[in-house]
Length: 168
Image (cartoon, rainbow, N blue to C red; front, side):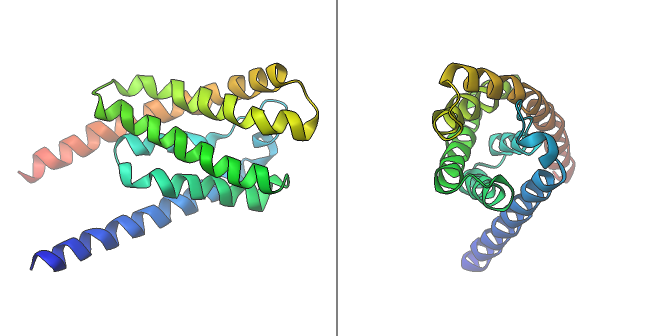
């Protein structure tokens, strides 16, 4: 019976991961007009915050970033795979915040600075823009998704806690 329960749990995680990847890509598609500009306000990156509640999403969130850069980015290999690695790094740090019992408000920092500083490393090279200017622009654009991600987790955490308490 335990195998069946484990298999059911794996299927749920896989299904949820697929839905989150799809949601990330759809949000990027709907917001691409301001997700790739001078100030890249990538609302989809607020979804990285879900790793705080669901650590199994770390790799799927990186894959979601890779896919969105493939479909909408147009800057090639470094942007696709670099974005995927930045997604994994960001989601990992978000999870570590939960692991070390930090408040969800701290989610603003990794969602702002890991993509902002990380993505600037190759975009500054590809676009021939000085790193400091590129990193500043990206970090400014990531503040909004960072705040949205923190709020998302605070709302969901209360909802999930309430649901678990109700089931007891």
